[in-house]
Amino acid sequence: MKKHLLPVLLFAAAIIAACSGSPSAGANQITLEVSNLQYQPATMEVTAGQPVRLTMRNNDSVEHDFSIMEIPMAAMGATAEPMAGHEMGGMTADPQLHMVAAMGATNTMEFTPTKPGTYEFFCTVPGHKDAGMKGTLVVKAP
Ligand SMILES: [Cu+2]
Image (cartoon, rainbow, N blue to C red; front, side, top):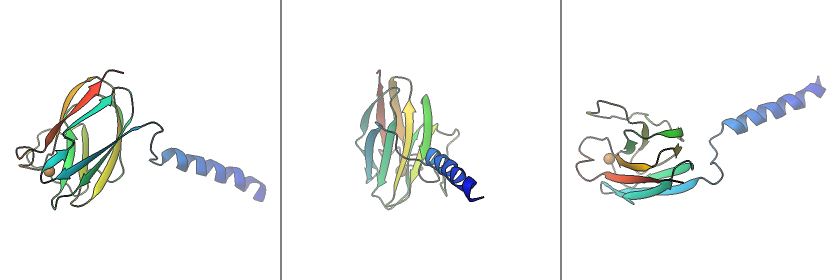
């Protein structure tokens, strides 16, 4: 009985390690600050095929998000429930890339853009994009 327990535990540990959202080695780390309805920086540059670990820090006293309507990518994951309690007023289609940060909170997601190009990102909270909450993600060819 005792003999068989260790391999089982090791196997379980391996599964847990594989499923945890630990940062990919070599991921391109970007921190996006949001203050007064502005993304900082408003332009970000990444490379196609390389994982991006994007952290958004919301310094405002209202909820914000980060959305890109269409972007070809290999993977996406957010550390928190990406849509928890989130109101996307007036949106007729779901953005492909989407992450919410509550007031004063930080959220992180990882994705790998696969196609070079220029992609607009913005906040889906009503009025925020019009107030200036938008920016550009440039995906360069590797
Ligand atoms: Cu916003």
